Image (cartoon, rainbow over all chains, first blue to last red; front, side, top):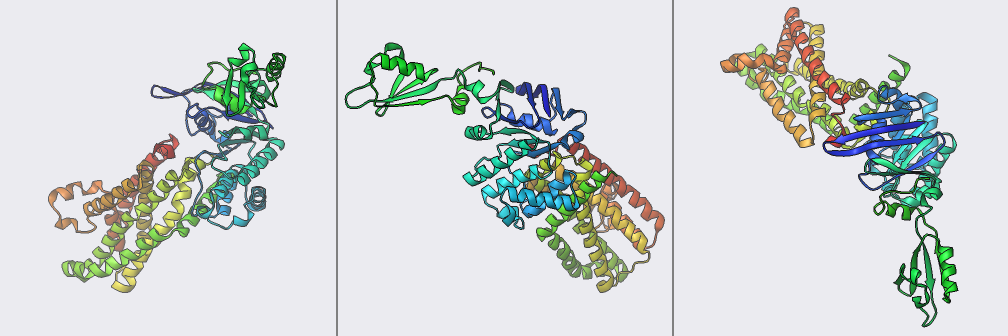
Length: 302
Length: 252
C-alpha cells in the first residue's frame, strides 16, 4: 500500500531524509521509531504531499504520489503530531468535514461519524466544541478525523502523545480494528510498549534513513537483556566468575548483569557456586532496542 | 465539476460558514461600526459637498474604508487555520487548493456583500441616497467584494502572525482608501496623490460605485474590469503560494 524508495529531502546542509526506504503492506501495522530529528515526521509530510522530496519515489496504493498527489491523498487518513482541530467547531463538525473531504456524504457520512465516535468514545461529546474537550478527547477526535473516511492507508504521527490510559487503549483498539479490516497503518510513537500491544512490525529511522526493519523479535535478538540476582545475608556478587563480574553492577541489594543470554549466564553463576535467593531474567525489549540507537552504529536487521 | 469536487467544496463552504457564525465578533463589529461612522460623518460630508454629493461621498467613503478593514476577516480566517495546523490537514486531503480557497472565500463573500448591502440600504433609507441603476450597483459591489477576497486571501497566506496581519490590514486599508479618494475626494488631494491613485484598488472601487450610483454603465464596467484584474492577480498569488506549500503552518 505504501512504497518509498530512496527519498532525499534537504533543508540547506541538513538532510531530513537521506535515502529513506520503507514499505507498508495492507493489513500491516508498521511502527516507525527513532529519535527526534530521525526523519519520521518529514517522511509523513512527503507521503501526504505537504513536502516535496528532492529525490526518490513514493507510491500509495500503486499511485505515484509525486506525480498524482491528490489521487494518492484520496487513499490517506492522517493524524499529524500537532493537534489540528477546528476548536470553535463541534466534534461532529470536525468529523463531518474530514469525512466529506474523503468523499462521503449523506447517510454514509452520518453513519461513519457515528461509528467512529462510538469506537473512540466520543459519542457523548459530539455536540461539544473541540476547544472545550479534555486533552485525551482531543487526541481521540484527531485520530477519528483520520479514520472517519475509511482510508486504506493511515498515517498516525504520535497519536497518543500526552494521552491518558483510557485514550491510549481506545486508540490502540481502533488502530488494530482498522488493520484487521485491511488498512495499512504507519504509526510513529515514543511509547514503545504500544507497538508491542499493536503487534507492529518495526522500522527504525536514524539520520534520515531506515536502519532496521523487521519483527520485534528479530530486531531485539542479539540485544542484551538483563539478569538480576538477590542474595541472602552476607552472600554477594563475589561468587560470580570473572567474565560475569566484569558486567555486573550493584543496584541496592541487587546484582544486575547486562546479558545477551541470561539463562547461560545464570547457569555459569550457579556452576561457580553462587546461591542467589531470587532470580529474574528479563529478555531484551523495545526499550533496549530504542536505547541502542544512540550507542550502536549498525543494528541487526531481521 | 466532478461529484467528489462538489462534495468537498460544499463541505468546506458549510464548515467555514459554521466557523464564521460560531465566532461572529469581527463580523458584527464590521457591520455596526460603518453605520456609526456614517451617522457621525455624514453631516460633515454634506456641509462640504452639498446634500446629494455629500451623501454619496459619505456612503462610498464608509463602504470602501470599512470593506477594506473587513479584509481582516478573510485573512484572519486563513491565518487562524494556518496557526491551528488545520490548513495543512485540509491540504493533506484530496481537496484542490482552489477548493480550499473557495471554501474559505464563499461564506466570507456572503458576509462582505451583506456588509455592503447594509451600508447602501442605510444610505438609501436613512440618508436619502439615490440609486439610479441597481444592477450596475450590484455589479460594482460584486467586483469590489471579489477584489477584497483576492487581496485578503493573498495577505492571509503571506502573513506570519496575527499582528503582522493586523498591521497589513489596518495600515493598508487606510492607505488604499485614502489613495483611492474614498475618505477625501481626489480633487481635494495633492497632485501627486491624484497621479498614483489609479494604482490603488480603492480608487477603482470608488470609481465603480460612483459611476454605478449615477447610472454610468461604461465607466462602471471599466472600473469593474480593473477590479477583476486586481482580484485575479491577488487570487493567483494566493493560489500559487498555497500550491507550492508557501502557506504551510510549519512556516509561520
